[in-house]
Length: 386
Image (tube, rainbow, N blue to C red):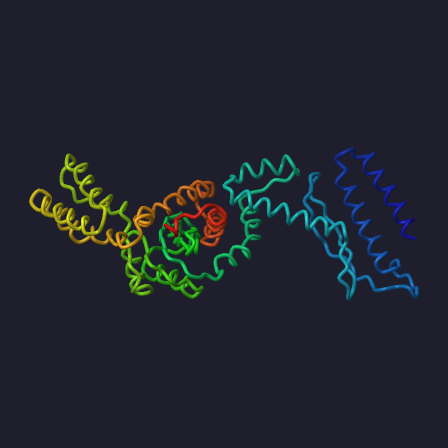
């Protein structure tokens, strides 16, 4: 019986192709696939439709429509259903696996910073398919489960913590806003670097930093000896609330930049910068504090605001002198984060404006996982033996 139907459909296929040429190939293949799935269901049930026999293993239950994008166009298929069974045509099972692999590849290309235009060109050449930004975003969501697991993984003891934030344009509630991407980096007891966490927030307000830091603690972060970051007011307040007893090292690079805003004359800028560098490059804290006092006195009359600023702010950049000499160069600034930021920027510029905070967090998480894994399998960042 099945062969009779099959013969009729083969004849129908030949008629379509003879009348429509290759333009009718899509319709012909659609009929062929539908018939192949029907035959497969008959074999699974061990009976043709309405056939009565003792060997029957189940009952047909109609069809479910499914659209399948292919190189020759969209095929409208009728997937045979079976009552009380997990039957599914093997052709479509292979197709689902292939489709998932294709979408994961699409997501990986997106994470790697390949533009939607280039992705579309690649897929059109390979598969005859075209994609848009919505397709790319949907594909990237396949990675969410893995990314959430990574962002919430348990932490342990880390000696040093480096905190930083950068801004990305994100569409929120119909408006494009500059959203803060909060990132935490840690150095473990063996001297290896790790990306500990990332969060996309509306701003660097204390509440957002505190929530992020609390999440690190709840995941098991402990044992910190020093925290390095810029002096954003929201971050400073959050650090006092979450890590009140951990020494804080203010980024010396940002201190040097901030100082320039208090220099009254352009001709003084290089001299001021050199004086501050001398303080930071001192052999020990005592020497640094001695040079700081000299600088404060030096500029008391010619640049009084600078002198007052140095007295209040420069000491926040001297806590690094309390640690091993070989570690000081790496702890005194947040340059570790700045290098990562350049790579993030290279990837995110492809996206331009993110359609949501989730999409922004998704792409940046992918970048950070890649960077963190490279760190963890490379050489130690700090020597812990000298």
